[in-house]
Length: 444
Ligand SMILES: Cc1cc2nc3c(=O)[nH]c(=O)nc-3n(C[C@H](O)[C@H](O)[C@H](O)COP(=O)(O)OP(=O)(O)OC[C@H]3O[C@@H](n4cnc5c(N)ncnc54)[C@H](O)[C@@H]3O)c2cc1C
Image 1 (tube, rainbow, N blue to C red):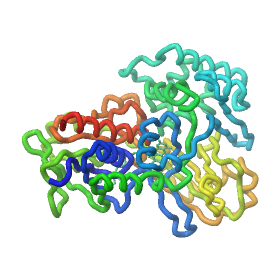
Image 2 (spheres, rainbow, N blue to C red):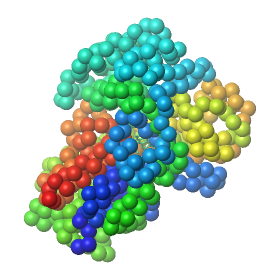
Image 3 (cartoon, rainbow, N blue to C red):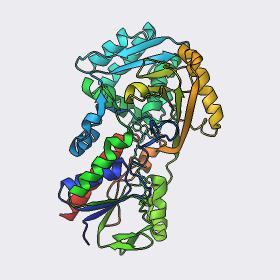
Image 4 (cartoon, helix red, strand yellow):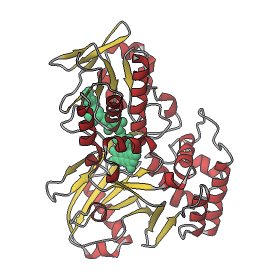
């Protein structure tokens, strides 16, 4: 066999695993079933406007250390622009604009001072945030991995008022975890807050890709793998793993088999079952548990106007159905007065028609931005990602499998595996790195 490992799936996880192995001198063959790489983090050209559209606007964070390492390795780090310090504009439904602007002070003072100076909170709310920040600094406030508390219960127990939850914590929870705070794990949310807000001012910064999401990493990662003796093939789906005597022997592609080689699966949890031979799925609980994870959808609404509607680059929206606004004209230089709106944790909205979602967005945007009422809508595109992420419920942590599996020579990667993070780019890249490390350790 001309390759050391086969990787199934060309999203962030599979490409990160491939780059890590290529960097370690291994020749990998990465197989992606779709005609393009990128999986759930990709971009394409909209034929009506020629604009580059992401399948959903993605934010990076300074605490995405593995992702930054990955982008640096493939030479595209400068395509993501990071803020000098954490600065989040909030737009209220009545059009009031406030900021959370955190100075460059050592953590957690950057956050504490940012909250104290912000017009986004009342004095009482500021004191509530400071109290929670202080108790987080002093140690864990949830009850360990077996904790079944959800985010709302935890915030309420920590003295966070209903208004503060609705206008601040809920927005952060839905953005970071893609789940309603009443259904999201408090343990995971606490971990996210520590990593993102309380470790260092650099880690708290937000980053936005200045190019389409695919251009950020897919071609450069594929070129890296190929320049190290590997191969990346799109439009090449794997039918099934070949397993005999508890060991992985390779993969069946339908028209050919590739044997005598280790395999890393980097496919989402809901697509793994089709890869596994029936007896493995039936007899091995290790694989069965992960299949119980539930999906959480994200809806993106792209609007093109005939005139500018805002100078803001992005904003968190408060008191509205839509949650975030991204000004693609400012971010990418798109000439089409293009804004992209995000509705995460969108389970109760995903069955709405595109026309209905469009009407809600235009009404809410018009209330917040007077320029929207004067401009004409030229074009729109609603993207529903029904399987955007797994739902990070309190029960989900126990369902997430490790990279090493009971089948020799078969490893798992993907944002849904046991990374300790929500389904994010960072979780996906970390999972790819972990699977590559396990493979390297066991193949020495
Ligand atoms: C709309 C949206 C917005 C998001 N926003 C953010 C954000 O702001 N910040 C953030 O950090 N994260 C965000 N995420 C999450 C992030 O996109 C994912 O966590 C990450 O992309 C998952 O990468 P992955 O490689 O694990 O899986 P995927 O990207 O799903 O890759 C898996 C690949 O496997 C392929 N595959 C499946 N079966 C087979 C087979 N049999 N043979 C070959 N190939 C196969 C699939 O086609 C796919 O390309 C968002 C996700 C969505 C959908």
